[in-house]
Length: 416
Ligand code: M7G
Image 1 (cartoon, helix red, strand yellow):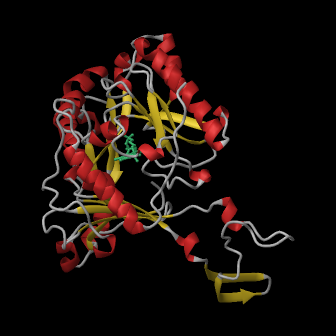
Image 2 (image 1 turned 180 degrees about the vertical axis):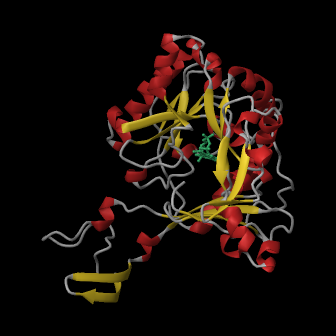
Image 3 (image 1 turned 135 degrees about the vertical axis):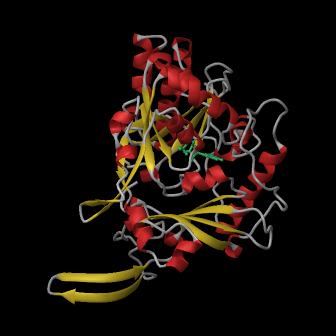
């Protein structure tokens, strides 16, 4: 197997991160080899300047505030760069690293910054008997906010990061051919960032492991979602070299060598680099993915990574086993997946009566404005009808008119 390369020369400051991401945006725009990329939903406006300063971000509205994950997704712009391009900025408070709470040994101070040091500012809120409540501010190195920027962002990016209603689709092979496949062929996120990685144009210094076999090879590197440092939240991506596998749906027995190589190579590389063994890893595919070039997600089983819900994740081991049992399993199986409100694919499914968007407004257990016809589950051909109580709409209905005029309300969620 080819040797690993160096990992994780993460930018150290937010401004450096911004510059790197901006560089990536420029690379993406310039780096497309003719005829390589499938049709994409392109950015609505041109990148007028390659760089932006995060500190000059101007907020338009909050797309999602996830109090559980401690992430907030923002829509806004960099007015000094462009008045037309919009940016999606995702801020995430970092998980604790176990080394951040190590305390000094008898020999002296800890080697890395620790929360429990002289730098800790402590504000006492109250002490009641044996119970104390404090607000503590550790040293600045321990206070970083992981920041992801998509700039310029498309409507699809805004949709992806917004908190909207979700609907479960039950996709039969026929519905895949008739609705999903035409949609993903004509409208999907650009894969240029994937080709930039495969062709060593971007993120080269982040590669953990590389297998260059054109049929069974892949590149393993930190996912955009990972800070590259906190082992507790390790999140890697294994991107296959083969470019003609859009998703799980395309997999068959001819891909078994690739899938087995993924399983073995990922486990070996992660054990070597991070000391986690195969049985500590969750390796899975998403269906539907956001990016239609086969890639596996990897995180520690003990971690609670975003996107591991049962309606979206398919474990690599199970995928291999299913294909071993039946070569064309993924061309014959009915697969569930989730679509967001306002998705054009959802509209297509709705037009075919293959999903029912049933929006009820319920107040104190009493349905308001009930549309019997719309909510009659018998009216749909497929069993995907999902009845939803739109608490958000209810909240919206109570909003004062000036707030309603502005934008969609900010909704705080406790769970994803
Ligand atoms: P997916 O299943 O297609 O989409 O996974 P979803 O999980 O976002 O729904 C794509 C994965 O690629 C996600 O986990 C992203 O965080 C990750 N990713 C996306 N981009 C644009 C990049 C990138 O530029 N670099 C890296 N390293 N990861 C990315």
